Amino acid sequence: METILQINNLSKSYGNLQAVNNVSFDVKKGNIYGILGPNGSGKTTTLSIILGILSANSGSYRWFDEPFSKLARRRIGALIETPNFYPYLSLWENLKIVAQIKDVPEKNINYALGVADLLKRKHTKFGHLSLGMKQRMSMASVLIGNPEVLVLDEPTNGLDPEGFAEVRNIIQSQANEGKTIILASHVLDEVEKVCSHVAILKSGELIANGRVGELLSSEETVMIQSERPEELSEILKNETNIKNVYFEGDDLAVILNKEMNASKLNKLCFDKGFCLSKILIKKQSLEDQFLELVK
Amino acid sequence: MKKLLNLEKIKALSYPVFKTLMIIHFTLFFLVVLSVSQINFSIPNFSIKGLFQFPNIWKFFPWVASWFNIFLTIVLISLVGNEFSFKTFRQNVIDGLSRNDLMKGKLLLILSIAIYTFLMVFIAVLIFGIIFTKDFSVDIMFDNFYLLLIYFIQAIGYMTLGLLFAIVFRNTALSIILFLIYFPVESIIRLFFKVNYRNYFPLKIISNLTPQPEFLTMTSEKTYINSTGNSSLDLTEIGLLPKELPLSTTLIFAVAYIGFFIALSTVLLNRKNL
Image 1: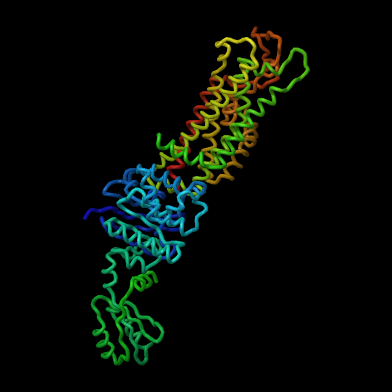
Image 2 (image 1 turned 90 degrees about the vertical axis):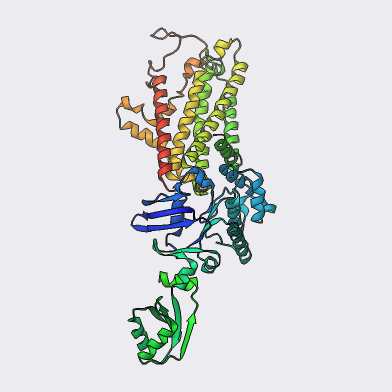
């Protein structure tokens, strides 16, 4: 499959702060790549570097298997952090600037405004829009050149539930058209629903990377109850096939490695002299996985 | 180039502050020259009309307009500063412009503003010159026209310095304040240098492109013969004006400074994060 983006050992620091540390991953054509991470994990910095806004201290990246060029930029539609437009210009004038930069005909402006449901406001000045509308305007500017790749950094920021759903629908429809999408988001449920792949960043480092399905199926969480739970917890923590044990209310949450499963855990507990009064396999969501990884 | 010029046109002409400041610039210039033309002083053998006659007017009008170049530089700084405060430089790069394109766009804007002010002064010179000069030929009419071309270089000089300030400080208000403060600061710094070196400072070089006209000579209705045999009053020789560099030398240094400002701005814009 064609590689759209190749990131090799990218690092960026601000003084003593290491914002991105040796990050590498590839995005293939048609991937919907989610980038997850808590605030300050390096998501926006990574995206800003690959879009040429920031320069990296070391490492490299290639778009469409060649060094980043002006032509490559025009094949990408991107939204980074907040919507950045001229507040004194109307939506139409702002998009005219984008259209001229991308060398696309002006008729695309109305199409993009229509997709973002802003056609009726085309003569409104950008500075007069609400935050949600500004975010939708950003989506319009991303779509104006019908780009092959969409890079979206928190595209649902500041949106009300209706706007949130609209933007999600736009992303979904672009994904259905086979476009490659790189999506940084805090909304884990969103990423899980939309993305095919995910990269998880923590303190500037890539701590997990792969297909969403693979990441979710690699580990299993089992909720158990028994007598003397503290004692059982200590015993389980020393087992090699058990990744982590922690209390969640009255339950003991046990995260198993690939080699372990619920019935093996039940047998193990029995062999150690514990009779389980509850055993429940919990399907792990991306959120569980994310919280576990960034802990 | 055409695309970049179009982009700058949309950004500038739709900006209310730009439009207002340009109207003020145009109005103020014409108000000043019109007011001066109406002054009557009763000194025998001297008349203010001499300033408005060909070819003296080519010296006087660019000198008056040169004061308003600072105003145009403030307009330019506010346009470039906006790109940083609205983060639109950043968005332009995301959308497909290179950083060199951003620089070229702003240089085209500088060139456009310089052409506007050049034409404004040119038209004003023709109108006032024709009104105030009784008998003139085409030769006399365009004698000293080159001074307007030098004024054009001066406008570019001030604005490229303003561009550098805007790129270094990335904040409209701060850049304007520091640009204005730079004028007295450079004058003070010059005092620490030997007299021979004082004329080579950037602002001094740029402002000397339109030297203060010799008002006494230009308003005099009589011809004076100075010691070198020229038919004008040499005010430098009699100590009324300080000795300046020859205009050709000043021009060479001004062009060099403009090149330096542009090069430094380009390097900074390419190296700094947007």
